[in-house]
Image (cartoon, rainbow over all chains, first blue to last red; front, side, top):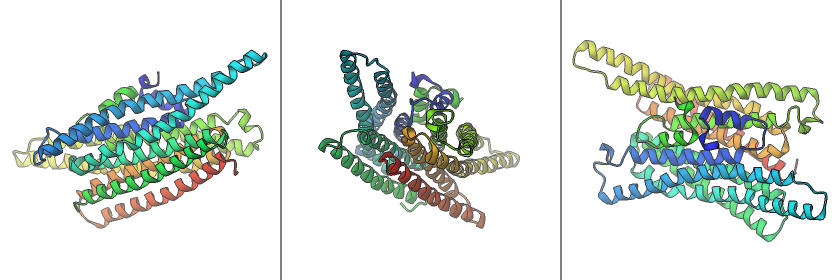
Length: 215
Length: 215
């Protein structure tokens, strides 16, 4: 199972000439790394010297945000596995026999179902990675200043995950019917990437200001 | 050792309230994932149906580029480990006793040496991650079109690694003397991030064109 591979082996398996794991799984892992870094900022702040002047309400916000980032870290790893397994299902569908009408029908049903899932996983990753920004803003605003670059890297990796998931949405949509639903998904995903870019740049400018002691 | 942790455990360890591993290590891992995805594109192309119309010279370029990406994948994992260990050295230096003049001198020497290394590792990561773009361009231009989104995710993750390494350069420079050398490093790193952004956007526009069959 992908999650149980060592980091060494994961990068080796990713490099192999097989369709899975691929860019979708790498994007999901990037999101999980971002969630982990955000949790790290909270863990270097809450109950530490860095929080000694924090009002209790701010500490409570950080604790709540940390619960969310811990959940997201786990969730994005699930999506990493789902990305690979949904594509494996699709490949299995293509491999089914198609000699009789019945076989053809079974094969088509399996392929159609798998295609839906292959599209659904990166759509979920893009949307759910975007949800990380609320917690990340809390970490950037109130977290330990010595870990401000870690919050910055988290912003970079979350946006990367969203951009990467979007490419996977687009390549799957490109092979699908041009209908209202699919056009809607394309537009929605484009908008999500643009909103994410703005938030990421906003967070990074706060990070840079804090690095240089300007706030 | 970080490289031997499972993906599950790596993300958990990253989330802990310890200074290492942190954003620098996550950025280096992002670069290694990008190198792996680029190798994957080559491995889905060379000696496969996708390369059947490729002139021999193009196949040779892809083989050469694959050798480079295989080396980079390994190299960025080394930098991931170095990032964490150099910071651990610095922390160990701060922990040394400073009661006598001799102790103070030993402590200062250790801290100064560690600080140099803590700055050097993200500088190397930014520069060496940038070197990935040559191979990635080859993968984007000649690689298996079914894997074009994987090349796109690689571009996103390489740029993310460079941006993330830059934040680590900046936070370390911010605590250092403002001298000609350090200003030079700041300017050089800013320029590298900007050049990287341009190349990444360029590669992504090719990826998007290929996804929609426009080239």
